Image (tube, rainbow, N blue to C red; front, side, top):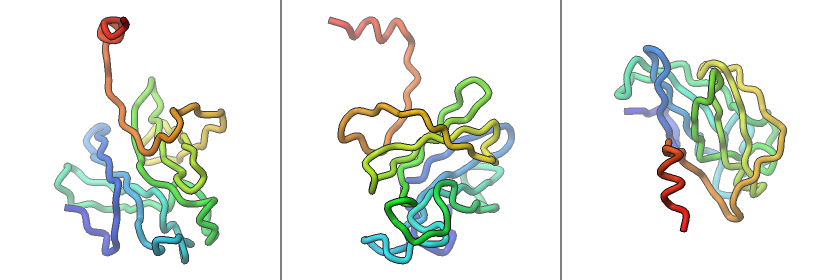
Length: 142
């Protein structure tokens, strides 16, 4: 169980080596994003030796800064996928109606924002990744 002492949502798990990582949204800050400074309404991570916890080493906010500007800092729906040697961390910048992508060679960070334009379907919110064989994709064509 994960209980940092404040409300969280949108958790996703990843395993790398002998460590488990939980990426989540800190849900503090009110429904209008008031008082969002200090990493609230943002994505953080925690570490454990297994999916049941105990969880420790809660990170600072991965996206944004300590500003109270909810439009600059609000993020949710973290999703991870490893591509080559890099972990790709996608998050929904829901107040800006766009996504952000961060990469790192380690789930411990540091995370670097990738500034190229992401093209997502209109209205997309949050996301998931599913590994599919090319032959299966070809089989879906009319």
